[in-house]
Amino acid sequence: MLYNLNAGLWQNCVKIFTSKEYMNMLFEGLGCTLLISFGAAIVGVLLGTLVAIVKIIPSKGPLMKVLNVICDVYTTVIRGTPMALQLFIMAFVIFAIRGFPMEIVAILAFGINSGAYVSESIRAGILSVDIGQTEAGRALGLPYSKTIFKIVIPQAIKNVIPAIGNELIALIKETSIVSMVGGLYDLTLVAKILGGGDKLASFLAPMTVVALFYLAIVYLLTFVIKLIERRLRASDKR
Amino acid sequence: MISVRNVYKKFGDLSVLNGVSLDILAGEKVVIIGPSGSGKSTLLRCMNLLEVPEKGEVWLDDQILTEVDPDLHPELQTKADRKAFKKQYGIDINHGRAKMGMVFQHFNLFNNLTVMGNMILAPVELKLKTKEQAIKDAETLLSRIGLLDKKDVYPATLSGGQKQRIAIARALNMDPKALLFDEPTSALDPEMVGEVLELMKDLANDGITMVIVTHEMGFAKEIANRVIFIDEGVIKEESAPAEFFTNPKDARLKEFLNKVL
Image (cartoon, rainbow over all chains, first blue to last red; front, side, top):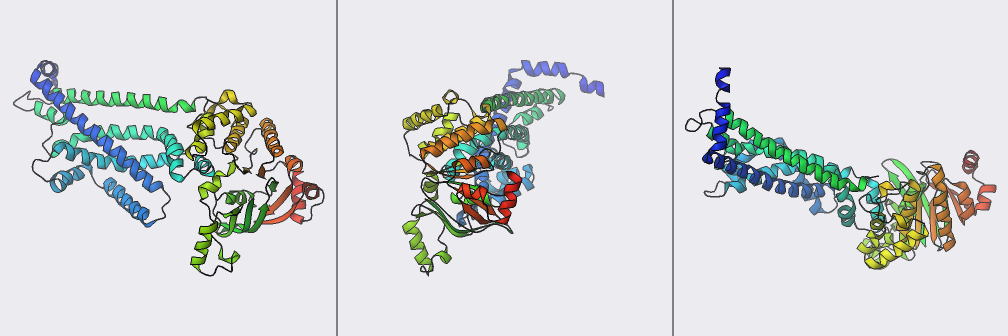
C-alpha cells in the first residue's frame, strides 16, 4: 500500500512539470488564489482599520454610538461563525445572482472575515502606543484626529505588522475553501482535478506540488513583511 | 493669566481636587509642591484640560476653557444664559492649549518623528507658522539649547536630559504665553537634572509665565515668585518662597518640609 502511494510520485511530478496543459491549469489556479487573497487582504485591512478607529474614538455623539454597536456586532458575528458558512451565505444567499462574478463574492467573503480579525489587531496596536504620545499631541493644541493620524497610527502600524502578517498568511491558506462553492478554480481545486481519473489518477503528486506553491507564496510574503518591518523600525535605532 | 476657580476633580470615588482656586499672573513663576497623591499634577493637568474638572472653571486671560459652572455665576439662571455666556467668553480648547505649552515627566517626544519633526509638527499643522518659519525658529531654539546637531535624529537616540530639553524647545516653538511643567526632572538620571533646571532658570529670566510641579526645593526657592503647598486636594499654604520655606504655618507643610529638606 505504502509502496503504491509512493510509486509514481516522481514520474507524476515530471508529468505535471512537462505538460503544458497541467502547468497552465496550475498557474491559472495560482492566479485565482492570489487574486482572491490580494483582493481580500485589501478589503480586510481597509475594513479592519476603519472598524478599529471607530472602536478607539471616545464615543460621545449618537452617530458614534450607533457605529460602535454596528462594529461590535460585526466582529462578534464574523469571529463567532465558521468561514465556510460565511462563504456559503455570500455565494448562495446574498449574491445568489446568475452570472455574478464569483471572484468578487470570494473577495468580499474573505475580506469581510479578515477585517474582523485585522480590526482587533489594529486596535491592540493603537492601544499599545503610550498614552503620553496622545497627551503630548493634545497639549500642543492638535485636534484628536490629527494626533491619531500623525502620531499614534504611524507608531501603531509598526506594532501591528507582525499580527497583520499572521492574518494574511492565514487568509491565503483559508482561500482554499472556495472550491466548496464552485465556479472558481483555485490552487487546491486544480490539485483535486489533476488527481482525477481522467488526468493522473493519483492525488499524491498534484497535492505535493500545490503544497509547494502555497509554501512559496507564504515564504515570499514572510520575506516582504520582514522587509517592511525593518524599514518601519528605523526610528527605533539607537 | 491662568485662573482656576473652585475646581473639583474625582477619579471614580477618589476625590483628587476639592475646590481649588488659583490665579496665576502674567510673568509669574509659581511652584506647586505636595506629597504624592495630593493632586498637584491633576491641578496642573486641569489647567489645559488634559483632565476635565467636574465642577469649577478654568480661564485663560478673559476666555473660559471649561463649561460654565452655575454655582460661580448665580446671575446666569437658565441653561440658555450659560450657553450664551460660554459662546461670548469661550475659546476652542485646542486654541487654548496652543497658548499653554506643557512639559511632561516622561518627555513624550513623538517617537515616529525626528527632533525637527517634533519641533515643527504642531505649529505647522495648526497654521501658526509657515513650515519655513517653523524650521527657522526651531533651529534658533535648538542652537540655544546646544542640540542643533541632533535635529535629524530620532528621540530613541537621545539621553533623558536631551529629550526633556527638546520637549521644552518643542513647547516654546508654539510661542506660548505660559508653560506648564509636570515634574520635569523626576524621570531623569541625577546627573541630567542640572541641565534641565539650568534651561528652566534661563526661561524664567526671559519672563515667560511658568507653573511648575516639582520636588526640587532648591530650584523652587531660587526661581519662584510664589510657592503653593497642596495636600488632600486643597491648597494648604501659599506664600513667597522666603516665607514659605523659613516660616511655614500649616502643620502638614511643616512635617513635609522636615522630611524633604
